[in-house]
Length: 201
Image (cartoon, one colour):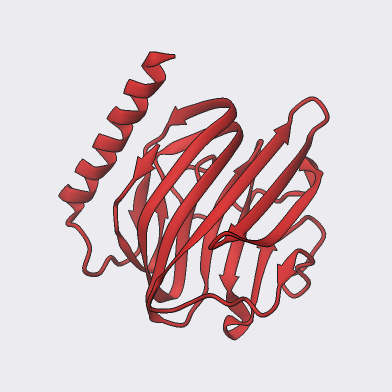
């Protein structure tokens, strides 16, 4: 699946129109072009979903938020300093591996080709990260707070399991992006491409 929506987000979220049910790789090209607030990437892992928060605590910390049992202030899987650029694109590569039989998982994140952070453990340790702004609790997505972020491109490739089409949507004010009708057309084309590719299998 390849998306090139280029939708800037202000105090809002973008839910991708797919639900990965297994192991997968996801590559995101993002640009924080205004503000210095935090961004979030919502990562489905098995039946759970965890958020990768980028540049929070005044831009100092990135972390997987939050592993079961942790409070908002004690994310253990974290990077300091966060080194999140502003005004230029950067690429996040996320690899998720799920072992359904053992009920374990792994998350590996690279930023611009370099190891950034990772986690492995029991799937039960991951919180659902059920953000009310996200359209589908099983879908990946991107969020921004006190910043404007452009999603330049998003690619998702299944390693094991199935990729299921979802509805996907944006919530929150949208600035300098496509109109709602244009955004709906972008999502429709993505969903049509997903169905076409799934039909080949």
